[in-house]
Length: 413
Ligand SMILES: Cc1ncc(COP(=O)(O)O)c(C=O)c1O
Image: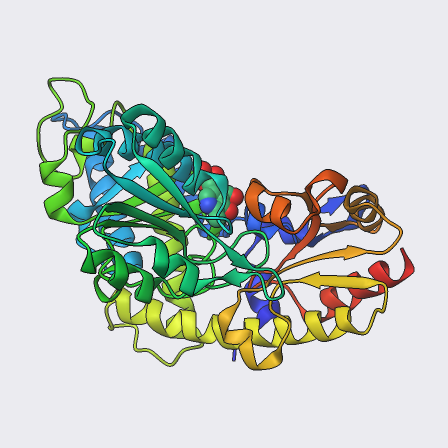
């Protein structure tokens, strides 16, 4: 079992005081706090290794080493090969970048499937690609009761004209985990690309791009205890074949072909540290030998994190259900807690989401309010005009006690 107090001591921000008091960080889907090893790795890079790449001198060689190390760590995180993982600014920028390259293959007879559950970063790049190429956009609907994808509807949209299916692994607004493996299979059956937004899945569970057999998958290190860096996995054959927009001296080699300009070296160092931190949980709490591979450690770590987060979800949703004036948006059946991550959105009668978030902020409980860029689901739920939702988003460093304090504050509000 995870020793959450020991874990918390490794996150410097958790010991800080804000307005003179400790804070409860339930804003995790917007960005998690950073592990101490991430701060160290970034400082080490910037103080001892800082240089541009491929030089003959020490700091440049150390920079190359840092980058190679980060590539392997990112590959282990996703179950990919190092040349299949592209580092970039963030998931949104990487997705727009890929869209520009894919556009050459799309035309007016083609269709793209997006969903009403997704963050706009997995919608607008494809809608704009469609505008540029004349392709048609098909929108998969959501079951309003459970905030899960309407799988029958989604399936009915996929046909021989479909060229791309873009779907989120886990919803940033309501926490639903989608059955992306099935959807990827449907896309593959008609020869369409699958693009998986794993930004909200990556902080909670193991990703295995080979087992999923997706064509592309993106996530962001700042959502899994690292710095502000994005990662894009692409099947080698696609990354090789597609035309990347880049300067002439930046050769054809993968993944550098896709990484325009100078990279965020310190961010890559921090990303590797975050991944190593997670892998370390597999050794400390998951019973994996220190000599095991990083991938094996990660698998064990996510198992331990998942078991702990299950307890957090249980406490949070049971507690919210006990407050009669609170409405929960999303999966609330205990039997289905393996179908959601620890991101729970609510409204409270008589309070706008902003007013509730402010009342929680008065108690130093940090939560987000609004639509969180998941615009379509906010509209579909009919809450967009009145301020959206309040999102309580947990990570493995949160505690049952913090949940109880948050519940009491919501009750009082
Ligand atoms: C599900 C999801 N997708 C995409 C994004 C965008 O990620 P980035 O900030 O790395 O562009 C977010 C950010 O909150 C998100 O939650």
